[in-house]
Amino acid sequence: MHVYPVMDEGMPSAAAARACGSEEPSGRVTWTWFNNQLEEELPGLLLDHHLKVHPAAVPVGQLNTAVADAVAAAAADALPPPLAELVVASAACMGVTAVRDLALPCQAIGRVALVGEAGCVPRPHGASAVERALQDAAGLAELLRSAKLAVDRALPVWDLQQVQRGVALCKAAAAAGNRLQGTEEC
Image (cartoon, rainbow, N blue to C red):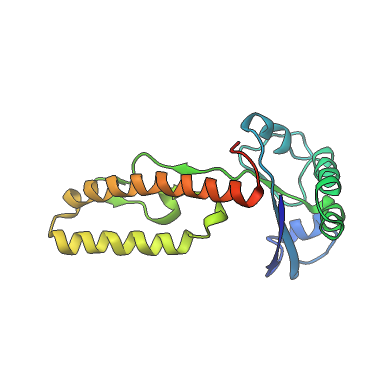
C-alpha cells in the first residue's frame, strides 16, 4: 500500500470544505491510498453517512464514520507513522473511490469514435490518460488520411485496433498496480 500526497488547488466545493472543518475551499494537500479490495467488499466501503451504498464513489466528507474509522485503523496498522497520522487526522473529510479497469468492447459506431478514457479506462498506475487521448486522435487522423477511406469505413478498422489496445492497456495497468502494491490481482 502506498500513500501519494498530491497538491490540490482547492476543495471540490464549499460543502466539502465545510465537511472537512473549513468555511471556504482552500489549497490543501490531499492523499490517495491505493488498497486492493475484492468486488464483494466494495458495498461495505462505498457507504455514506446516511447508509446509502454508492456504486463508484462516496464524496469527500460524506463517508460513513465506521468506514472512515476502519480506514484510519488500517492505516495505523499498515503505514509508516507520518502517513498513518495523515490518514487518521483526515478521517472526518475522507472520500472513497473504487478504481476499476474498463476496456469497452466497441469504441466506434457509425461516424462516432471514443478516444482516450472515453473508450478505455485503465487504473491510474500507468499515468497515460492525456498521452492516450492524443495518440488515439492522431492515430485516427492518420488512418483517415492515409487509407483515404470514408469515415464510416475507416472507423471499424480503427475500432478493432483500439479495442485490442484497450485490453492490453488494462492488463498492463493492472500488472503495474500489482507490482507497485506488492499484491496479487484482486
